[in-house]
Image (cartoon, one colour):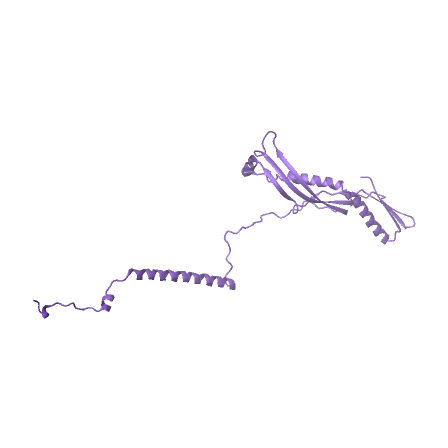
Length: 244
């Protein structure tokens, strides 16, 4: 039978605190350090963005711009004066017109989806009616002996060239066949709209001839001369127009 002195009792050589101190680091502590480092980086980045925005708002630094913004470069040459001439025209009336041009160029027996060019163009332009005083013939102005009346024979009013206003004119719709599109990709015609412009000008010119613009110019010129010459002391002013 064992004696009490021979019984080996467990000893507590190390305290609980010593046991915890001697344990290796727990992996969860390493993960927590990485998270804290990431939070520090994110916080520093956010602080930097706030500082930059604040500095930019105050105007200390230049404004940040998009490096891929659209740029336009004008390499046009200066205008060259080709000629100069004196004008003696009196513009007595002006008409403003608008025309819709529907022009189609295609080929017979070829489907439109393959070869077709159709343009719907809205053209706006103006035409002036003028009297050329520089064309007055000798003896066109006849004054009476008593100086109370005067007779003037003027050339008939004319229509100036149609001025197509490109700022108010535009292509409303356009249809192109497959071959037309391919041809434009290979080598487009920069003057392909010229035909539409010329047709619009011709239509406006024809409309001006039928609009009574010439008669309006005759009446306005007559009133202008009557008022001018009567202010000079003429009691009777007669204005007639020669046949064109």
